[in-house]
Structure formats: structure tokens, C-alpha cells
Image 1: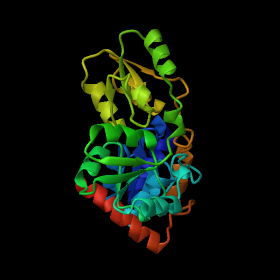
Image 2 (image 1 turned 180 degrees about the vertical axis):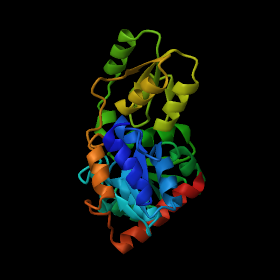
Image 3 (image 1 turned 135 degrees about the vertical axis):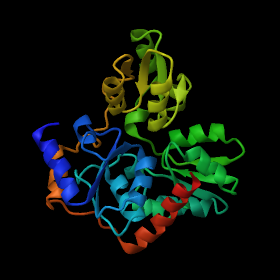
Length: 301
């Protein structure tokens, strides 16, 4: 731990603050967090937090979700401009138009979306809970927003449902091609390929395992292979390389990086603890609608 990290650790106790960090965050940020997890785990932790304040080291939709699930807490997003390109592909009017077009359908909203979109959806999901959420609904028709790649993956695994896809995606995961997979397999022969379902279907089909960030970590930790190609944001490769030096981990693409997830710095976290950041605030009506969707998601687990 460096001096700045030690200062953060001391101050978070004084200020009764819970620090949560996503797996894609820089390692020095993860090291000062009380918990590190994927979107689903962080949402559950935020909901049950007893501390006065929460610092969500991630992107805006995660901080919004923490505030929605635990509205009495002061919630900070350390890097105020850390957004999500996928969330930016859809607005509430897009969801309402789909609901009008498919009145019998339930709207399943990937958690990588704004509070306004969650507020007009029936239930949220994460990549780790999407299949379970879709199966939990009585509706045969499911509008899945905004990630077409995750939606297509779920459609294959829940064939009894008609999945209506929205044309959104994570541009970082969607940019991975079959040629990238072939190049990685050529460069790292004999490795096991673990891929996130935000990747294109033709990429997922080449993988030895497809799953959420938490699922990929678990597969690498428990797997018998001694070498893995990691098909998600390079933060996961960093975590595994540090944690399991006896195994080898390679990124599927060298530039498999979410720039927004990397914006958080230790200085930003300290600024939150010192009261030099503006807390997350949302319109009450938006909060109420989005809370229903998020609480239904958490209850499914």
C-alpha cells in the first residue's frame, strides 16, 4: 500500500464509507475497496450497505443503481464523467416504442443502462442473472434491451421464449472478431478461451466457456488448464495474472480496454471522502420506477 492508499483506508473508516469497485477498475483502486465484484454483486452489496455513504468505483449506471437501491445513502461516483457507451445507445422513448409495438411482452433491461431506461422496464438483469431473469417471467415474448449480443446469447439458451432484440451493444466487446480469436489461438496454442456474452455470437461460439465477468474469473480459478485467453476487459486478465502466478493469462485483444472504467483514480476516491465531489442525485419519479426493476432483479437470485 502506498501513502495515498493508506490515507484512503483510514479516512473511509472515519467517514463510515463503503468503497465498492468493479472488476474492470485499476488494481490500485481495487486494493482500497471493501469489495470487488461484477454489476450484480455490487448492486446487492449497495442495497444492503449500512454505512452512511457509498463510493462506487465504476461507471455512472452503477452509482445510479446504488442510489436507487439504497436511497438513504450518499452515493459518489469518483470519476464523474465515467459513462457507459452501451447505456448511451438507448433512451426511455425507445423502450416505450417497443412496448407499444409488442404490448404482450415484458421488458428485460440489462443493468448497463440509465435510470430513466430502468424506470420504464419491467425488470433488470446482469450478464450473470440474465438467463434466470428471463426464465422467471410468465411472458412468452421478451423485449431485451439494450445489448443485442447478450440478448442473442440468452435467446439460444431459453428457446421457449421469443426474444425481441434492440440494436445496442458494448462497442468494446462487440469489436472483437473471429479473426481476433484465430490470432489469439495461433499466438497462444493450447490455451482455454473464456469469453463474455457481450461479444458477438460468432465469437462466443469459438469459446470454451461463455459467462459473466464473475463466471470467467471462477472458471479460470477452478479450471485445470494452465493457460487462458481472457475474452473480456483487460482488468480481468490483470486480476488473474496477479492472483494466480502459476497460470498464464493472455488478453484476447491487447486493446481490450474500457476507457471509462479506467478513469477512476485514487485521488478521485480521496476527493469523495473529503467532500469534494457531488453526490449522485436522481428525480424521485425516476428513482421509484427504476427501483422496482432493480429490486425484482435482486429478488430473482
